[in-house]
Length: 155
Image (cartoon, rainbow, N blue to C red):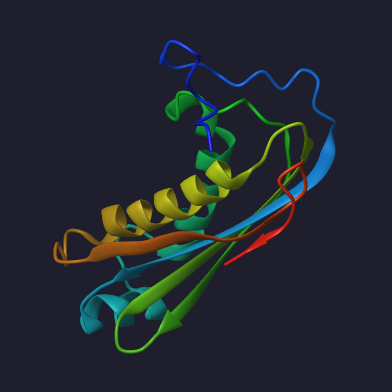
């Protein structure tokens, strides 16, 4: 398989999507942040001094999804039609993050979903780092994507 973001001379390029059909596209990504049980409990109880950690992380993830083309060089700017972030707190100290992104467009929205999860996790870290610098962000991956020429993908 040829890499689409390189031209015949091996130089980086943004893929030309001019002739592609506009289709409804959805991408779902997940990730997690692991922390000390004390940090986890303070998030769950709303006792973090900076405020409601998950509410701020949710907004940060959505904002990041909208800015993905500004930070990932070959991403096309997309007019996102839907963005949802959710969190699942699992004992003893894991917060699972899921992002569901939608667009009607000529190119996929996977990078936006992955960026939303990543920035939501980074926001949780930022808001809790004063009490727990040992938090670990990881397991960020694409769960599912649909729409477009490459079809439906399910992990």
